[in-house]
Image (cartoon, rainbow, N blue to C red):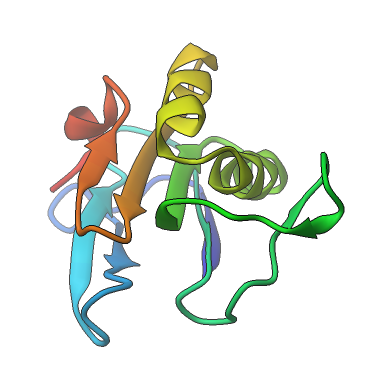
Amino acid sequence: GDVQLLGTPGAVRPWRVGVSDPLRPGGLAAVVSAVGVTELAVATSGSAERGAHVVDPRTGRSAVTDLLSVTVVASRLTWADCWATAAFAMGSREGLRWLDSLPGVEGLLITAGDEVRCTGGLAGLLG
């Protein structure tokens, strides 16, 4: 799912967004914390919930990738959702490299082999 947070969360209890684990239904892969920010969007794209619905624009067919999900954290939901879908279609290596190049964007990628890959600044948003 996707969520957009706006405003200032309470100091004692910051907003936290759980990221579903595509390999463990009902489980969490990570928790994003909105400490010290007034705009935060979290968007996930993948095949775990809706099957193979992401289309590779290069082929016009379902994206064939090693990924199960891509979660993007940014300031605006529209862009976070677009970037998560595009990174998913690229696959784990190219998608991670591309997300890491976008300013103000962090990503969490989970492969079918249960490998977790993250952009460089994501650790600062977890908690």
